[in-house]
Length: 315
Length: 315
Image 1 (cartoon, chains in turn red, cyan):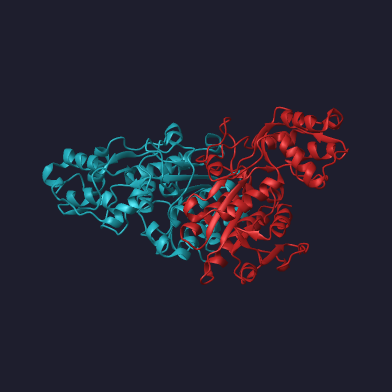
Image 2 (cartoon, each protein chain N blue to C red):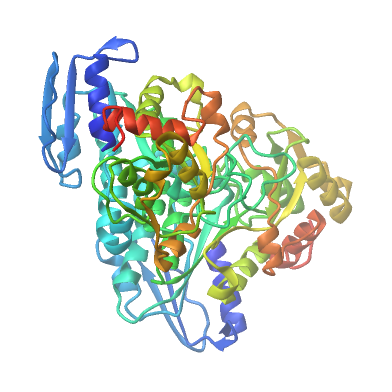
């Protein structure tokens, strides 16, 4: 989803880091849709974990690589081997392919996750120097990948940056089975005139950034230099920290009480248990001082969804 | 060195975690010396990175595995591929072999290192929840291995514990080329009647534990339960934090001024640069509260060396 939105933005801008964009290579496990673009576009269906796949993908020596590929949290927990194969070995294969390519030092923007943190965490917010104690295999794979990326960066095989993305909200499309799905669902479905289930209490706090902000993070990261970053290249991203109750209140202010009335409270013990281990908020001080920007109010997140996905209209 | 001392201690105790020790398998890249021991002893020369080596080693399902193997810091920095192969893949192979063995859940005690930390670090001491930002490939490999160990522990494939060992001082034997070598050299050589070079200023602070304490950490770790540890199984170990000047003063108090006079100050810019990035002290609060014990005064470290290595005599 973020890859698709990033592509749309790149095509619209026609530039990256102030330089005209001439060539786009889009890679996914199934061939991505081909965007309308003046320059060269290649769409590739590839399994990054296949032997030699990474070498082939970087043969044209792209200046910037956005590495967003991965198996999601739930699947990495269910399928232990697949999670390590895709999320850790797949990342390492890419880094190794870059290291082994002569006269090549691309910018690598890696999407990590706040799943690298695990409870107990400081309620006043996770500082930038807080340790990584993931409570999922997904989080462990992302955290280990961050360490590799930082070492390859330090050794100057590449210019790396890792972004610990907060939960992306409002995620467009159909409801999915992710434990975090309801954070988007309770906004997206009511705005579309559909009922949504809320499995946790109104007091649950979490941090959110819109898809628009996530794309902004990736582009801003691509522009940061080695001099600006130093060796500590893995950064918690900013976002709006708010409770579910505050999410709902913001929805009400933007779309009215009839929309809010479509949220049904149906407690789900399993979701409650999973969500309890998640980080509630990050201070993200370094990211903010490096110029990363997110929404500051959940109303802006609701409005971004209405503008970007609903053509400005609410059902 | 620690493996040899751990073996000697295990053989002397004849027990581990209060249970009689019946079988010892000693593994190194060259076959270790065979200790005098009443039970079964197997000495194995094996390359842990060879395909199937880990499976073979754990075929007899040992209750406790002390994983101390690794390529040292300097070599991992010089030989990038070898460092990752031995320190990361070697560890992962062992964890995978354990995961794939049916009805088997051993205790795995892993020797990590304070090299997982990197400057800048809080001068008042690194707290237990401080992030890992290694400035060597060795440190990155140890930190990534810690994450894997914690995930395999959380998934209950094994009972893991990782120990971030401080610098072991006084390291017995010949001087080596490690940048940290002088911390031991300025004590060991003068006590043996030999001159020693000091490449840094007297104000350099570092944390030390004796080989005796390091063995104590490993045995104490083997006895800790899953209930005591929870999910945060990677722990900074305690030690004596002192300056080089304080080390020398302690040596003087134990062995007199003639011994101290054998230390020659020969500044070495490269060593100074490397040492500047190292952590000066850890608070090690969790380790202390879990009962790990180290010396509290550098004099005790000097005396431990005289007792354990010099038969109580000073040249």
